[in-house]
Image (cartoon, rainbow, N blue to C red; front, side, top):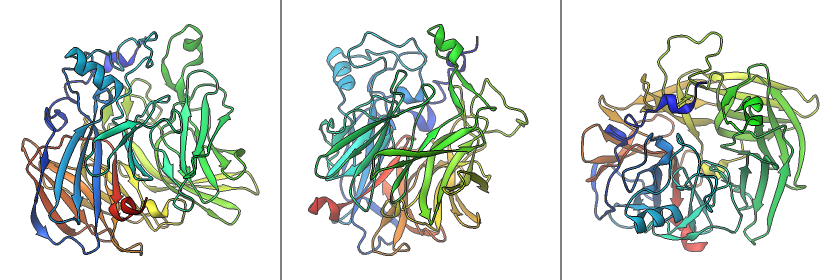
Length: 468
């Protein structure tokens, strides 16, 4: 039987642009290489990443590394840079032992470990909520860690909401922290809301079995849940084995969960797929519009009919060939329509965090290089109505990452896109600020430190930090 261990790509994801850095640094007064920093732009641009503190166990999966956050602060004098490991329990145990003490995702899980079968590295996502930068882990059952948004020092485990997976969202209308959690045993899915007043509601959602969850989309009233067509083979589970399969004859379902009544409203069927990341969602009368990067052929070892020779990235057994789609869910008929907005190989879609759950003109994605190893070759802007797209490619030999929308004023156009851009082989990096309408350069800041390729980013407005 083919397993994920047959796709060990640890060298590819631990060398080159992925090679970890071995020290924490604080660098003041970064050099402005080009352009000007917009007046009113004050905040911290941060990215989470996988960065092993010690030589990791083999076989190595990119998701195994300890969380490290890299950040540039803007608007409080000259730009400055920080990077810090997230001080998780697993990190502390490794430091005490002087070595990596846990196995990785491609090894047999440690079912007897008190902290769970895998090490919670808090290396995946970042969310800003009530004066704290929360570092989240991609796997269900993880407890986030709270960081100081400016120093990046780890404050404590954030256990107010219980466990969750990555990509919690902050409802910009209420300030609620909305999240999902999932498990291999019932309840397979849990929806959670933590209010600014500290009121916590965790609601179990009935599913036919365990389903991997990674993201949730919000409208003003609803959370958009997903019951994907890629999940552990039930026959293998009955033999205590976990083997991921894609089931093309099992429709993917989108669920609308009412956050006012804390109840599931209904499910809608769309063509079979897997989804890592939503772009946005909003209500339009009796319809709900959802935009997401969906993948119809998600497993290397389980090719779907029509797979061509297009070169797309893979991470172990995961195959990344996304398309940006719009799903329109009709509450009157119970039917869903799918429209492909953009078929470019691009992912990590982002919108302005202030407009989550409201109509947005565009989504901003990272364009993938034509390579088996994940590399962001540019930034892509896709119109969420027409699908019209423009793209800004990085210079040859350079790679970028996910962008965040960094506002400096109240309007949708009063913002820049922020991302880190690195030249392969260089011991420096740059922070790029781009115009969200044209993708032209607004400013470039030199960082005299190498920043490895990473996962997700967040813009933290320091005005909110002062008043939280």
